[in-house]
Amino acid sequence: MEFAFYLPTDDPAVLRPTDLARSLWAGGQLHGVALAAGLARSFEQAMAHRSDLRPARMSVDLFRAVPMADCRFEVTIVREGPRIALVDGVLTQDGVTMTRASAVFLKVTTAPAGKVWQSDDRPEPPPISIVPVSDEPRVPLFRSDNDWSDNFGNHQNAGRKQTWQSALPIVAGERPTPFQAVAGIADSTSLVTNWGDRGVEFINTDITLTLARMPVSLEIGLEAVDHVEHDGISVGTATVFDREGVLGSAMVTALANARSNVDFKGIEYTEDGSPVR
Image 1: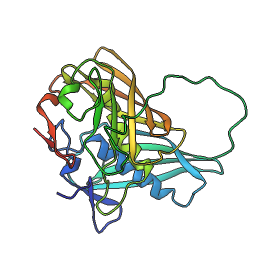
Image 2: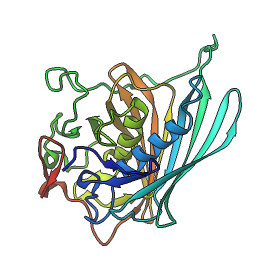
Image 3: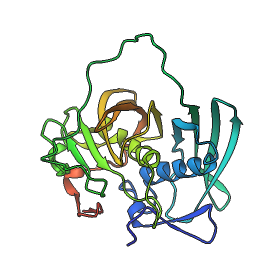
Image 4: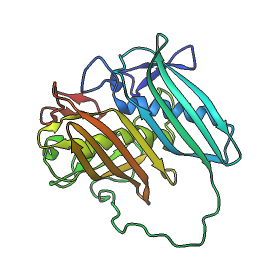
C-alpha cells in the first residue's frame, strides 16, 4: 500500500485513492479526511499565484458516498480582488459531482489596536513526554474521561474529547502543506463531537473550517466545544489548535445513522495509521 491517500495519474486533475483513503463507515468509499485534504490541495494550487492571500475559510459538503475510484478535482475562481478571493471546487467521478467545496482566501494585513474579548479556555497539546515534536505520521491520540493515548477503545465514553494528530501524506511523493494538513484533520471534528459511549452514531454531512492563521507544522489538535442534537440532527463545534495556540474553529452538521455506527472498541491501528478490525 502506498502511504498516501492518493496516487497521481497522467492527468494532473485526477487522483487515484489508495487503501489509506478507505472509510470505516463502508469499505467501498472514501473517508472525509481524504476528500477534504484533496480539495484543499486543489484550492492551494489554483491560488498559487497569490502569495499575498491565505486560506481563511473552507466548507465541504459531503452529500454523496464517494466510491474508491479515480477522483477529478476541478476548481473555479469565483471572484478575485485585492483583499479577497472566493474559490469553488468539485470532486467528480465519471462526470457526476460527488463532493463540492468552497474557500475564502484573505489578504494578510496589520491588526487593529483595539482590544476584543476572547475566551481564556485554551486547549493544550499533549505533553512532550507523551508525544515528542514530530511531523512524522502517527496514530491519532485522544483524550476524554481517560488521559491521552492512541488506544481508541479507552475513549469510547461520554466524556469531552480532544485529539492530536500529525497529517498523513495526501498524494504519494508530496509533502502536505499546513493548510492541507489542517483541512483534512478538520474532518475529525465529527469524532471529537459525535463520538460517545456507543461509538460514532452520527455521520457528518459537511465540514466548515475557519482559520485566523496557518498551523506552524503538520501537528494539529481539536477540542470539542459543544455537541447539540435534536430529532436525529447534530451540530458539533471544535477549537483548532497547534503547539503555539489556537488557530480557529471547525464545525460539522451530522445525521443520526440508524443503520450502523463506528464502534472503535473493535478497531486497532498499526504504526502506519492503518485500521485493523
